Length: 145
Image (cartoon, rainbow, N blue to C red):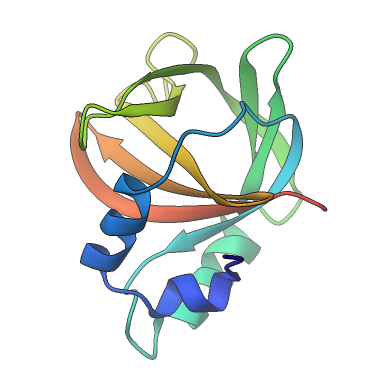
């Protein structure tokens, strides 16, 4: 089933967790992905918050599958910064395989952050963000078709 970001923004955390748990990691992505922070999901504010975060803070990630890394695109200028190692490993959520985006060795700014993603539809990944191994928010990554 294909999902668009608006559908994900309407889901509850429990529904997103169910989607994440029910999905496979998929291949490690390559190239740029449009990112959407899923905050206050299921409320009328979710879409507005996602747009504000996207415009002023985080626009997405650019993966380099060959080297097992990524760079986040941040600020309204779309700067490529905040590097992470990318590999398949067990999820902190359910111990099943996921794609881990590990900042612990690559970024002083984000060293306490770990992201996990799984493919929920072609070109679409659902992610979970952890701060010191505690879950915080979900996010979506959409790659060009």
